[in-house]
Amino acid sequence: MSTTAVAQPQSQGERPAWRLVIHGGAGVIERGRLTPEKEREIRAALDHALATGSAVLERGGSALDAVEAAVRELEDDPNFNAGRGAVFTHDATIEHDASIMDGRDRRAGAVTGTSNTRHPVSLARRVMEGSPHVFLRGLGADQFSREQGLEQVPNEWFHTPERRRQLDEFLSRPSAESFDIDLKYGTVGAVAVDREGHVAAATSTGGLTGKRWGRIGDSPIIGAGTYADDRACAVSATGAGEFFIREGVAHEICARLRFTEDSAQQAADTVIREMHALGGTGGVIVVTPRGDGIYSFNTPGMYRGQASPAGRSVAIYGDEEGQDTVSAARGGERG
Image 1 (cartoon, rainbow, N blue to C red):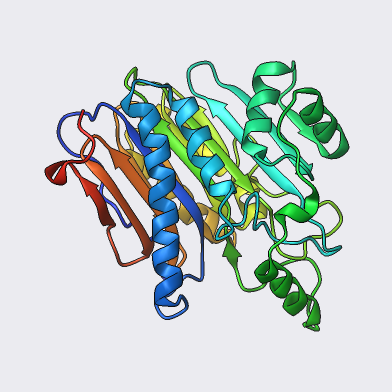
Image 2: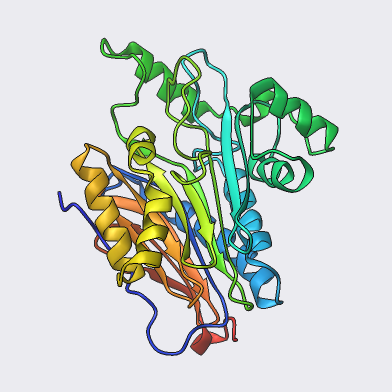
C-alpha cells in the first residue's frame, strides 16, 4: 500500500472566493466492497453536506458556520460513524466525540463521551462560545448541553441495525478486545476558507466499534484530529486515533506550513508518512487561507468531497480524482 494516496490536486491559478472540503472517514474502502446502491447513497450524502456548507459560504457566511453546517448533515446520515449511525461501544451504547476550531483567533471547543445531544459538533461549538473551557466530557458535557438548550434525543435514536450487527460480529471474534480490526474509520469532518480568508475545521465521530474503558481517539483533541489557524491552514483527520494523537497530526501540518516552504500537499503528505511510520492509517483534509484544498491518506479509500465557486465534486476510492456533481459550466455556484 502506498504511504500516501492523493486524490485531488491543489487549486491552481487565482484564489477562489471560498472553498469547503469534507470527509466521511477513511479505511479499507475498495471497489466491490460497496453495492452500487450504497455507493450512490454515500455519494449523494457527501454532495448534500457539501451543498449545505457551500450555501453558507456562497452567501458570505463564515468558515465556522459552514463547517458546522456540513458536519451536522453528516451527523444525521447513518452512513457515517457520527451522530445517528455512530458505532457501538463494547457495552452496546453510543458515545460521541466532536471538536471545532476557528482559525481567526484559534478558539476551540470539544466534547467526548456525550450520549444524548443530536449534534455533537454544535455542542463543541457551544463549549467554545458559551463556556470558559475548551474540552468537556461525559456527564458534564451532557449537562452543559441541556443547560444550553441544544436538541436532546434518547441514546436509542442513534442506534441502527447495521451498527448493532457490526458490534455483534466484533464481539464474536476470539480476538475482540478494544479495537475494530477491520480498520474502518467513519469519522466525519469539514474544513473551509471563507470570502474573508478565514479558516475553520470541525470533526465528529462515534469512535471505534467495541471501544472500552472510556477510550478517546483523536477527533475531539485539538491539534491531533482538528486544528485551524489563519496563519497556516485548517485540518480535519480520520483514522487510527492513537497514532494521530502521538504524531499531533493536525497541528503538525499547520506548523509545517508556517515554518517551512512546504505546500499544503507536501506538508500533509509528509505528516501522513510520519504517522504511517509509527503504524497508523487514515487521512486528512486541508484548506489554506489562499484557497488550496487537498486530501492526503494512506488507506485504499476515503469518503471525501470539496466545493468552491467552480462547483462540487465527491470521491470514494483512492484512484479517483472526484466525480463532479455540480459545475459552473452546468449552472452551479459562481463566485
